[in-house]
Image (tube, rainbow, N blue to C red; front, side, top):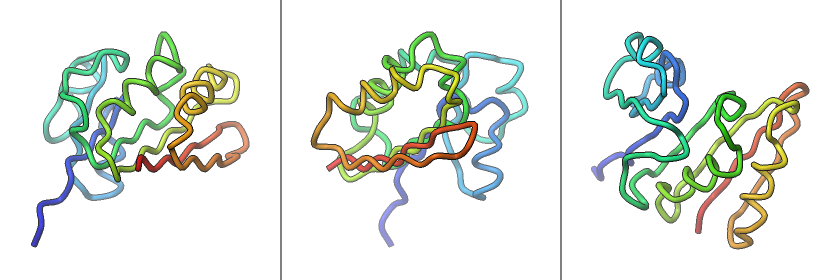
Length: 130
């Protein structure tokens, strides 16, 4: 059986994504207090400067964390940097947040397969990197 791809939850807070999906994620957040409540591997870091090599993760998620970042544009560029070819990125952002920055970062990469999902107060983006 092949190894499961590494999974990253960027802006993970308490690590809810991994608990809901019942899968191990590496949790990254700038708040040590929030990360103390997460399970598994936890890394204190800014989402615009992740301490991982290029193309490390097969799955990257960021749920309602973009609005806490200094730049949606810089965050999405960084999430794409650590995403492996063939990997998937799932991002949600409040419509009132830096959605324009998120969209700009995705638009500058025309090779990406991007699906935009209207989630009422949020926008979701599901991205596959070729």
